[in-house]
View 1 (cartoon, each protein chain N blue to C red):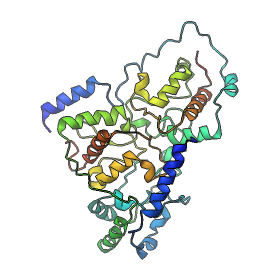
View 2 (tube, rainbow over the protein chains, first blue to last red):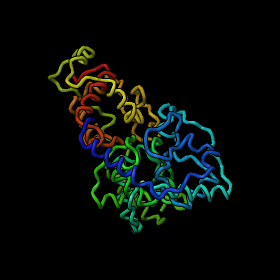
View 3 (cartoon, rainbow over the protein chains, first blue to last red):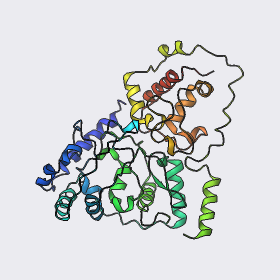
View 4 (cartoon, helix red, strand yellow):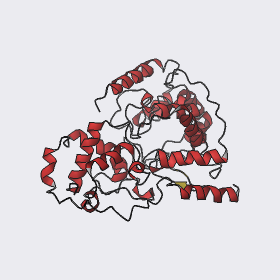
Amino acid sequence: MNNPKHFFLTGVFLVIAVTGSAGAMAAPALVKEKQCDTCHRFASGPAEKEQYGPDLFFAGDKFQKKWLENFLQHPEAIRPAGHTRDPGFLKGQRRTEPHPVLNSQETRQMTDYLMSLKTLKESPPLNLPALSKGARVRVKILFERDYSCIACHQSYNLAGLPRGGVSGPSLLDAGNRLRPEWVYQWLKNPKAFATQGRMPLYRFDEETLKQLTQYIMSHTKDDPGQ
Amino acid sequence: MNRAFLIIAGLILWALPAGCGPDPAEEKPAAPPAESAPTAPAAAHGSRAHPVTAQTRQTYQFYCAQCHGTEGHGNGINAPYLTVPPRDHTKADYLETRSDEYLFTAIQKGGLAVGRAPCMPSWEYTLDKDTIHSLVSYIRELCRCEAL
């Protein structure tokens, strides 16, 4: 994998990582108090050995504020097999310690902080319309057949029931959890957020990027069978 | 959701080789070429143009083991959730019927490109050609077999 493009992309990543976090708030004492940095990274760079939770240095790009507020008070597993840095990941032995539960005051403080953590210098709103039913079926075929996403991500079948692999984060509530702008950027260039991930890299054209983003954002627990 | 729409959409997905759906070729592995003869498997590994290195094994663990398992038995953490089981890379009886070029294309372009299950994605833009060649060598090491 000694490809010049990797050096270029790594360079882009480093530039973004250095310049993109300028608007971040100072970490509240709560981060230390709840030992969040034991599992999560709040800055780019090499992971500590024990940091088995998802990276949060781009939490403000990635998450919807309302979902984050709810998650911090009612945590649930997003990655059924655990995080890829978890030593038990490939063995089906994910770490099972429960995520800390925050009270409403702590949640407000933590959410404000997390939403200030951004990597993207610019993230203009996408304003993508919802897919029609016919278009959704067409993109479902792209998602499941052409790009094999279903092998690693939980999605919904046509009856609205969960279906798919567990090594990637579940997409069952992606429409409430993720910001479409982040999904779009992740699909376009995941190396902007993670130097190396287990998801294959793709070179989607612009239309496909938008359609897949719309499709992923159409996944919600409120309406799984839409 | 409209019942008629569900039925139509279901028929469309069924008619196409839909995501990780049943693979019509799954039960009928192609017969080995008539002119080929069995070769001594293990002896060939060391002489391969793209030998298995520590990097190869690491790459397999990082990407392939999610579905194919850490030891290549096809029992990775995604395996129970896939309609078509991931290939068991330790089984010579199937893998010796496949050429190295076939395995290379399956990794590079994905399962659909070789008429197999679409659960196997394309790694074309993730892994360079030398890495894919070395993964083919590693699969040959796991199955202790060569193409017939």
